[in-house]
Amino acid sequence: MNRAFSRKKDKTWMHTPEALSKHFIPYNAKFLGSTEVEQPKGTEVVRDAVRKLKFARHIKKSEGQKIPKVELQISIYGVKILEPKTKEVQHNCQLHRISFCADDKTDKRIFTFICKDSESNKHLCYVFDSEKCAEEITLTIGQAFDLAYRKFLESGGKDVETRKQIAGLQKRIQDLETENMELKNKVQDLENQLRITQVSAPPAGSMTPKSPSTDIFDMIPFSPISHQSSMPTRNGTQPPPLPSRSTEIKRDLFGAEPFDPFNCGAADFPPDIQSKLDEMQRQRWRGSKWD
Image (cartoon, rainbow, N blue to C red; front, side):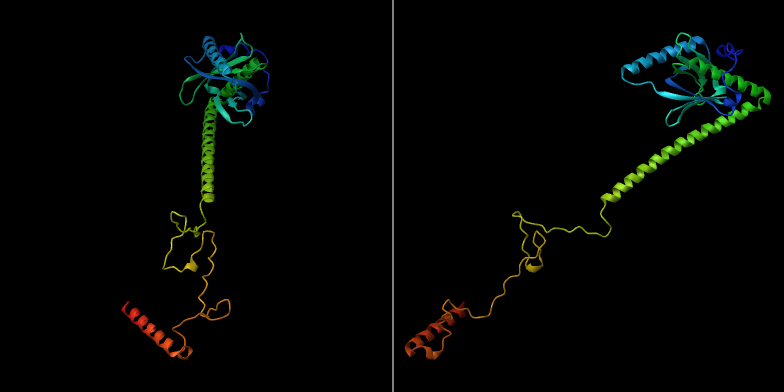
């Protein structure tokens, strides 16, 4: 047990054993971040890490970034770091991997602990800012260590192996939940793309009416094959029907038929005039024959 915990060993713990063994103790704090350290414990190691993360915090603050708030859940199984609103687990630090924990005596709001990462096997120092509960959080982690050690002695070491298996299963569950969320997002994106495609595509079997081509004068070209009445105009209406030729004999405004000297009867003119008309009609017939 490290020096931070041994100095508090003889004092009365703040929480009941059942609260830490069957449940957890929650705390709210600001998370300054984590940084890699070379040693698993030591006051100087922690002090350098705090100094480094404080400097990074001042830079982010000057850029307008706020320190993220987190929720800590402390139990005999470890320390979970969660997002306060969504309760999403950001870090799960198993208790047997935590090697050092202490609050800063020069700054009463700062507390830290060092944990060995399960994937990289590197020692990371986690630094937090709590205005009123820094020392209390440190004591709670110390009490969790004390209870876990007593359970270890009572079970003859079997309890530690069980906790390791439980911790491994919890990490696997967390990874599966993250993978499930990513798959849900991908399915949602595919559904949105399919919906957009269905809206933009025309219905099956429908044909878009093709407008007739026009010439440079924006007029429909004449086609002798197609009937004029079957060709629609630009506004979609049929042109008016052509007037049919009338076989009736036209009359002038006095009601008389038009004069045709060649269609007149023989008795209509005197003989000399009729002979001249006959001669003119023969000449007309010869001319049309040669043409």
